[in-house]
Image (cartoon, rainbow, N blue to C red):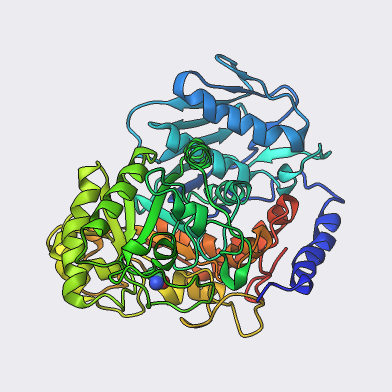
Length: 519
Ligand code: ACM
């Protein structure tokens, strides 16, 4: 089910024509408006007249905790402009100033652009980072070039005041069905952080493989991460603890929090192959690299199950600075209902014991122990009595409706790769829904945010990831970040079409959806 070479050629070859054509006559006035940003900004007030022109004399000013973000901005703008763009403490006029000050919401920022300079203000470095992503999109697409481009670099004048609608804006990558190397994960982090996505959930274990080193149970990765443990006998591999810690740091530098998931009590065949004592009869099952689900279960009545769960949770929590630890809980079709509740009653509190907020797929809502948890809704229904009950008891919800946000669903019947069990999801389908109203029995106050999962049954490498994630991940990013009042398909469609040349310069092989006029 590999994406075909033809698809790759199509997505990369066509846009080159436009990129070449637009290099001809640089416009005198900025062709980009303050509102031409993905995800849409909350408020924009354009100013008449000139904006700010970047020149070889422009400096970036910042101090203290603003310095790392200022350095990231300089590093983003230097290759395409060829300007030195030094980061200095005090630059006077002609500066892009990054300022930390009280009064802005978490991750929110204010961006003032005028002929004399640019001021980006936020209370937290995360807000400055969000503002930097906006600023980059206000420059022409050639800013993404890796070598200097001869053209005028003009930012549109005016003011943007921006803030997120939801605190949690996530993407999920499945490392279990096909392992993805740290370099591929870093590349995904680079791309998703451009759209103000702030959580990356890593699905680290499943029936096929186990992808994170656990020192107290070393065979999990020695056996479960061996070559050939991907779907169809592909690939294999796992993250060492150093790999994982390095990914956590890399993501944190981009204001992305890693959310680790170990899926229990179902989806555990790989763990049971490595440790047969995790089955009730003590007999090792055969390794599985097919795509079936629902056949494996931990032995809920055995003490060793809870030693295993606690060791895994403790070691994961120790290397995870973020607040959430995801324990799966989905599709436990081989765990009887009563056993499922017994399991969750013991395991959900273990997550708290190690200082983390329990997080799980919506099946955990059946357990009274999910009261303070985060519940990830992945269904296609418009009501969920069990989620509503857990919410009434204090749970919060992340929305990942499979028929809207699952990035591994095909775009249409011709899509190479991907699955179709939740339907085809073209860009408009991914975009046209409201997280506040998805579940009619859950109030918006309980919605922590949205997440777009990318399951890896058919995904081998970054080419495959790019093609299914982009552009749909941007639709989910906009639902998570932008105010409901900004929701507008024709506007989104136009902004997305204009983004294409940036992905081309970045080497991202996105799906050229026929719903979008790509420029
Ligand atoms: C899921 O798609 N089984 C969460």
